[in-house]
Length: 339
Ligand code: DAH
Image 1 (spheres, rainbow, N blue to C red):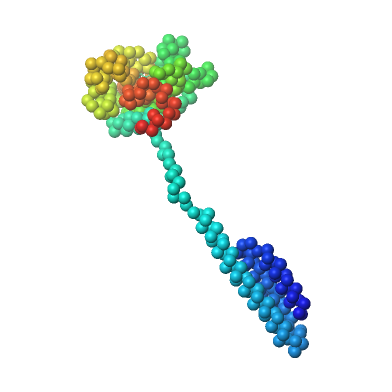
Image 2: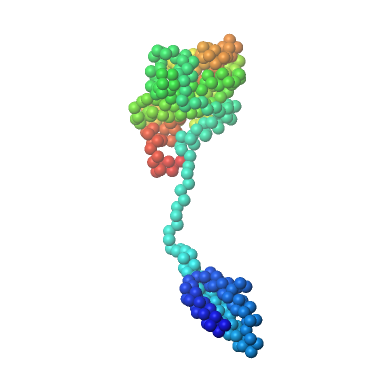
């Protein structure tokens, strides 16, 4: 019995010498003092010891128990304090470090302008529809009155994917889709990206954005087109603009025209912005060709309509006073952060 107690003490001392963390101490404590631990076992064994030896042995075992308890408590105190000190050291915040800047994303200037454009048209009763960027020759050309060998196709250098599929060269591709799917009255704007096989320069790019618009109902006339254009451009430029209509040609409208507005910067006397003409060319438009209405399943004897299409980047150049269209795709933060 005596030897067993000494052996246990040695074992404990060996274990105790290895502890590194407060939780090791807890483990040792349970291991030696727990209900199924060796100290309890020795206590059970006391019953087998003779009555005169029992008090002495009892005291020996008890002394060891007290010793283990005491050492564990001291160990816990020491290690706990050390760990706490280490944690505090590690969590220390260096208040002299400069803060980290959070960069907040922003909308692209062209999208900001598009939001404004759409909001004005919505306010005038137009709904917004999106057509496909990849489309068939029919919706982009043939159905809009551009037969296969029509020279007007050369106005828009097209990216063909197959002989019949292409990247739309204008948002006019969405017109027939809307006519096919809905009955008049139709009052729709169709924004989107368009693609052209052009040399990239300060004035043109291989892709840009357009906003197409269309109004079809009974008795829609040229006067409605004029009024709609005047109203929209006045709202966008936040002034009562002066409009001018010049005859032009697009196969899907008859008559076709281009709308200019009197330069809002110089008031028409001529400046850099209007290239000294006094006028800003802003949009192509016209009365929808009867053939196109027919292709869309709408009877041109009953209904008439007008349509328009303009480029967002050109407009953004005008409104923001930027001179190079490439600025919109160069991701120059110095420029983008100004919006
Ligand atoms: N699609 C023409 C272009 O990209 C613009 C245009 C002109 C659209 C007249 C129209 C329109 O709807 O009536 O150059």
